[in-house]
Image (tube, rainbow, N blue to C red):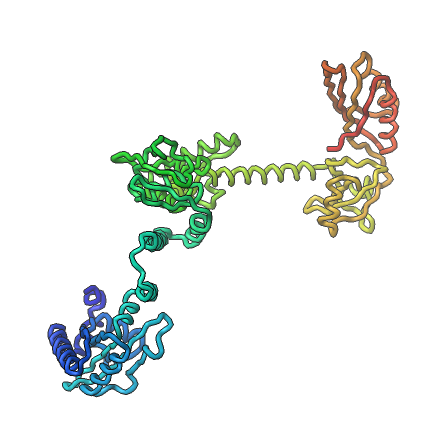
Length: 530
């Protein structure tokens, strides 16, 4: 019917090629059927003969598919003969060819050579007495069943299988799976859902009437409700398991008898989509819930999405984050589009948390890298460190190990910051030598004296005059103290002193440490790296 109005010119073109109207074609088919039935009866062949004139749209599709003109389409009128045996098929074929002239090249024996899908039939095209073409199909009842219902129906019939409710349930499940595939627009999402819902351990539960409901392990009453019917899932407000009220995130067990408590109206809760709360296990239930929220007003979804994002950011206790920044993480230019997605459940709170925390971690790592790369004021190689084979390069001392003249050192070529100087035994240097050894170069201390900040930690039993004695040693070496702190521990009567010295060389540092270590009550003196 639609073809006539969607492509009127094509419709009229094909209709004009017919020399009769559809009603006349139907009368013609009825006369052919009557002739065949009478002739088959006369020959003692029990047969069922039916016929149909082909619709104009079907003819058009065949012409398009095979690239044939109308004159080469021989099945614009067709009849089907269904008999009991294969022998009768060939006998009926002989009768047809005795009545009308067969068209050369238009005979197919799919009984002797079935199609890949096990289709079997005899096809022949003939020219009747009045010059019209006619297609005739001849097959047995068994062949007809296979052609109409498929090979599975053929197998079941041959096996003589009786009605099996378990088998029927599996067929119904497969049908529901195909319906589900139509609902899920993203093929990747469907495959992932299939893996999680189908290819894993199952739990077998019962309805109040005793029907078995097969679900993935970990399923909840909400999954059960959506398995029964979408509307039952939407209106689910509670559940009884084995006559006992349970929470909706209760995980069902084998043998549980489940009764869903519903309201007359209302819809699902957005909390059901939060994976942290464990309300829904199956992908199908999640998809149904998302579809429900998608039907809501866009403004309502945006408002709900904003509330979800802001609540999640508060729980994460992260600073400097808002809906706009989170939207950019998810590659959204329009924050409202992002919030609407959150509102109807395409993006959940767990995904937001993972993205934000990952971004926070990356930001912290970059900050740590900046701090590690942040060195003493830049000096040219001639004033502090010489790079072997190269002159006048910018060098910086790594804060992670604070190398001093006299320490064994290596250079690491950074991106845009010149050469970073590390002690050879620095953990970061050891890591770089293994990971990125092509950027490691040989360096040596230059002749020019300069001072380097070194942090020292002294641990001692607390006593009067301790800081005075330390200051005396530092003054004797003509060293400047640029900062420090003292912490006393009342429980064990000890003190921890941390201060920074401006040291000229490793030898000077060694002398200072040795002298401080000799002071009364001091039990540890250590250079602090980083």
